Image (cartoon, rainbow, N blue to C red; front, side, top):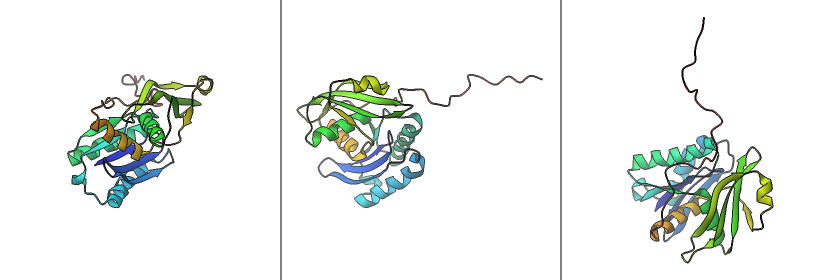
Length: 206
C-alpha cells in the first residue's frame, strides 16, 4: 500500500493498493496553493483510507515535468513523510501516470501527453502505446516546447489539466510488480527556476 503524491500540475494525494486499487484520493486544482494544502490532503487520504502510517509500504511521488515551485513542494513532502515513516520513496515520471490512466481506461495506440508549462509553453511526452502488462511505452520526452510544433504533430493528443496521484500510485505498484525501473532522483523541471542565488557575495563600496 502506497501514499502517492503529485504536484506537477495541481496538488493530488492518494492511498493506493495493488489489489484494491485507489482507496482514497483528494486533489486541489489551484496551482498556487501546493504548500497550503499538501499536509491537509495527506491527512484526509490516510483518514479516509483508514490506514495508519505503519500500514504503508512506501511513498510514490511524481517527478514532473512541472514548474519548479510547485513540483518541489510535492517532492519535499514525499521525502519528509517517507523519512519520518521509515519507508522508501519510489519516483515516477508524472506524464507516465497520465498515459497509464489513458491506456487503463481503454485507450490504445500512439499518444502525445501535454501539460501546462506556463510562459506559453507546454511540457510533452510521446508514447507508442501500452506493453503487454498495460504499462505505457514512452518513446520521446519529457520535453519543453512552444505550442506550435506540438499542434503540427500528427498524433492523438491528450492535454491534461492535472495528474492523478491515484493513477501515479497504481502505476508505481505495477512497475514494482513487473520489475521496471523507476525515475531518477533529479526532478524534471526542464527549465531553470525564476529566482536564482547570486554567484557570490555582493560587493559594497563606500
